[in-house]
Image 1 (cartoon, rainbow, N blue to C red):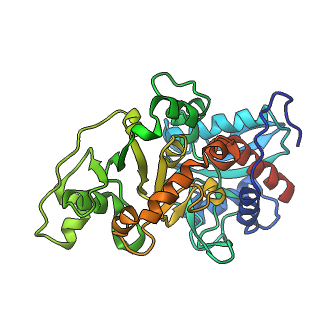
Image 2 (image 1 turned 60 degrees about the vertical axis):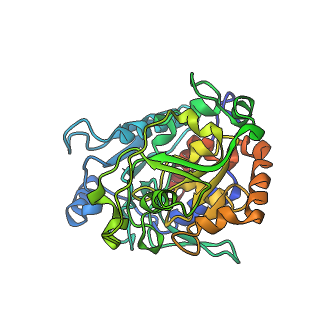
Image 3 (image 1 turned 135 degrees about the vertical axis):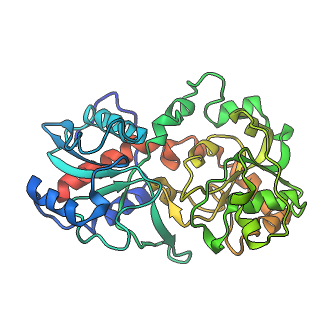
Amino acid sequence: MSASPSRPNCPLPPALIAGLKSDLAAFKPRSITREAFKAAQQNDHRIRENDITAMFGIYNNTLHWLQPDAHPRPRNPQLYALADDLRAILGMHRVPDVEFMLNVDDYPKAQGKAHGVPVPLFSFTKRETRDASTGRTSSLDFDVLVPSGAFRMGYYDARLMGRLPGLPGPPAAWEAKFPWEAKLAKAYFRGTPYCGIHRFGRCSRYVLPRLAHEGRAPLLDVGLVEYEPSHDSERHLNRSLAPLTKAPREPPEAMGRYKWLLHLDGHSYSARLQNLLLTNAAVLKQQSMYVEYYYRALQPWEHYIPFYVTAHDDIVEVLQNRHTMQQCLGVIGMLPIRQQCRLVASAAVDGLSFAVTTICNVF
């Protein structure tokens, strides 16, 4: 593949290349006709056109939405965001003709098996575990992980380049406005109680506010900006618990005041992580059941401090451990490396490009 001379030098790290190749290995080389694909759609709900799933093709280096009228418009905004990213890729690379599915749901579609999915299915997330001793990953799903539409929709690229008015951009800008020495020694989170399947069967977005509310973790500054007591999964387990108090909304810049920023999963993953990694704070990341494509390039204790590892409330021990606090300083020391786009989500266009062009080599 050939790149435009003006294209930024932002190579994918080996872990992402290996991950994408592994994802694609589940799909055997084959040809597909329109009739065969329609027949497959009738037999498999995972690849039917709907608000969050769409079939695309690239012909003569032009992107085509193959079944644009198969579902009422407008569809999910992230489908349009990914289409824009793909068009940007086609401006940088010459891509052979290829067909594929895009899935912008919070969950994978090729769950448990790839059989019956006639073309690669691009998704934002999948279940994946990493062997701590070997570093190898394994998954129950066969989706091909690609960057999410939140990369553009969340203005991550603009923030990375410092082009978003009202917010600091890369870590150096955060440090200039919120020096480490002036930050509060607390772990901060504000958000909504989106909950899916979390480790230990407990939703972190209800667990951590409860820990803060009960005073079990004085270093936690955690609040939900939306709250309905009847939805509180911790109260489902213990009816005697009092309802939480809804926290006031704060601007995104408020997280600059804190030394530690909490990343809590939502329905599956949470796209917020890419923005937390831009700051000059240490990120305390929940051990996820679901991963985004760039998680494969991140290492615990190097790019973030892990919790939700041994128990649903192990954040209490993590914050009390002096060794952990020293490790946080070590993570802050990684800031010059964080600014290199290969370690965070700023390689999004390259990641999607590699997936598309690799498919062309396989099929």
